[in-house]
Length: 138
Image 1 (cartoon, rainbow, N blue to C red):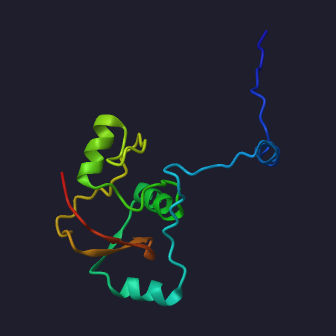
Image 2 (image 1 turned 90 degrees about the horizontal axis):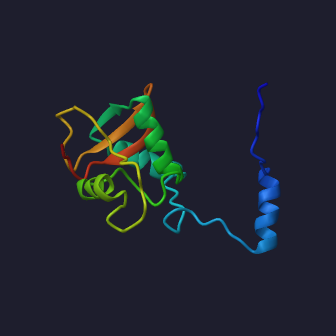
């Protein structure tokens, strides 16, 4: 015979009710949810106009960029610097001490990209984000 065991699951509403009853609050990783979305149309246009080049992202780069923008990778506000990358690889922690088991980097083999440039990150030609390149490392 084959037996199926299922872990009991609580609906989101039931979980929220329990959290409220116990006075619990969900705290984002790093203590604060980092929302990096720009919603003001004038600011969006200004940012897009300030870019040096367009860069078509891969699906994985798009996923990482969206998670940084919407706070899914809180406390990150951008891709990792070399110092944070090394720290995450060696200790699974950012320089700040926050736990992060996955190095989130913007990898590319495009040699024309230099520190100080602003890239318009696109997916299928649609602007998604503006990335200011602070450093470049291998």
